Amino acid sequence: MTWRLRFDSLAARLIASAAVWTMLGLIVGGFLLSGVFSASLQSEFDARLKFDLDGMIAAAEPDPTGGVSLQGRFTDPRFERIYSGWYWQIIPDVLPSKNDSDHDDVQISRSLWDKTIHQTDKGAQGRLTWGHGTGPENQHVRFVSRHVAFPIAATAAPGDSRGYTFLVAGDMSEVDKEVAHFDRMLSWSFALLALGLIGAIFLQVRIGLQPLRKLSLRLADIRNGKARRLVGKFPAEIAPLASELNSLIGHSEEVVGRARTHVSNLAHALKTPLSVLTGEASAAPGPLGETVERQVETMRRHVDHYLTRARAAGALDVIGTRTPVKPVLDDLARVLRRIHAEKDVIINVDCPRALIFRGEKQDLEEMAGNLMDNACKWAVARMAVSARAEAGGRLVLAVGDDGPGLTEEERAKVGARGERLDESVPGSGLGLAIVRDIAKLYGGGLELGDSALGGLEARLTLPAIE
Image (cartoon, rainbow, N blue to C red; front, side, top):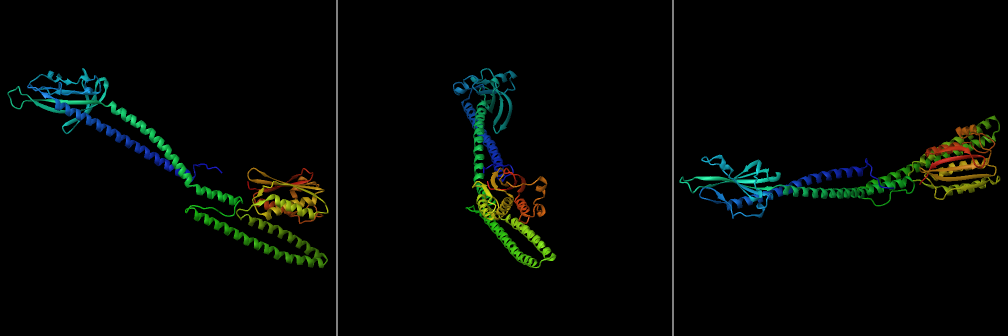
């Protein structure tokens, strides 16, 4: 029995629900980790920009006319390499006494060459202004700037000063590349983690539900007749269920046992009065005696018929019944050879030793015995019995003889309502009817056909244990 995952099973529900929550957790966790990493890089990048801005302002040297100079005081290789991604510029305020052309007197780093930073957005945070812009070659840059006023010593008026905006910018592509690389690594890592977790969930569910599978196998063994009780150790959650099932099976056997006892008692209670009536009728010859004898015989036949059906129906309620077929057929053949010794009928039995009937031994003896006895009565010299297993957990028992056989019309009549075709042959005439009734109770059937020996063949289909 292989373990398969069905979409309507408890295992599928557990795995699906755990997998969904696992995937949601990993996706949310991935976004959070990516956001934290991106914010950390952004904070580190901003700290570097602020550090460079503070260094540039500290290195600025004012001159008597209010100008500023960084020459020889703020040197960093990043700002010397053209279009390196790191830039600075100093933008002077326009004095009211000067022309607007003074605004073009902007000092820039060597890395900008002949370009300037074009600001696209900005926002003030205290004395600093943060924002984004476009640098050389359409680089996406982030900048920080600060306005600083320097006094003009060359003027006579006290308090004269001129303001400058110091700006440092850095290319954001470095941060974007690191974030993209981290996201790729995070995606692959979380994908592998998800597969590992789902695999672990699958194994956990399979191992966790193994006791239920074990319980199912044990119940199948009981149904197929391989066991009579649930045996083995079960977890604390399953043990009460196994105990209750064993109690239920025991109770069923007890009820069926009492029913069989009552059926047997009834059979014995009826046979004695019927025997008395038969004896009295035989002792009083005449029409009345003959009538009583015929009616008593009819009563005996019907009592045997319906008691057999009741016993067979009760046997079906017992779980786990199993009967080896070959020993039953061999015993029946041995008994019938003695009963029909005067006919010297050759009885051949062909049955594999491993063939098992899923039912009561008494029922198999009743069915096979009736068929074999009937074949011996009509056989001329030979009778053959064969049994074999078929697909779908069925067995076929075939009993044939070399007798005269039956026509299609006779086959339709025989066994129906106890009708007999030949009164000269001993028997009640209910044998085939009883066989057919018991077979139906087991979900099988009886068919009549032509035998390879030349006579009649009865084919009985019954459940088997595979």
